[in-house]
Image (cartoon, rainbow, N blue to C red; front, side):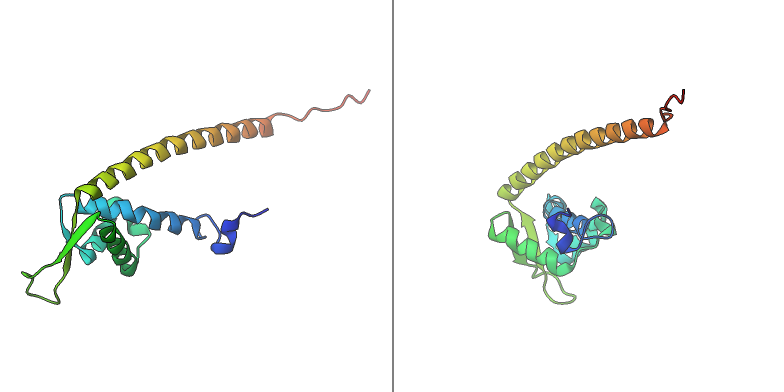
Length: 145
């Protein structure tokens, strides 16, 4: 029976699961990009490729929504860049100590997830290999005597 994810866009490469996972990864990606490098939201969007997120572009409105949420939680602070002369004034975001601690907790969780994924993939590969080996074994023929 299909899981509940099928009703929300499916799964796999063409379905909705991977983009949802990527959107969840945007939060730590923004924190990392801001670490030691205060900048504005549009520049952050342009730098997402540095973390491999260019294959799954994230809408700028999603980035600003996450930045606003992080600021409301005290993970970031922002100010209007008064020195900018070209274009409209831009809001520059800076990582706080709480945000840096939050990033470290994300990194810890991601490392744990990597370990879990390796165990899962190893088990999957072992299972697939067992079935591949059994598929190659000759059928047991009945004695016709």
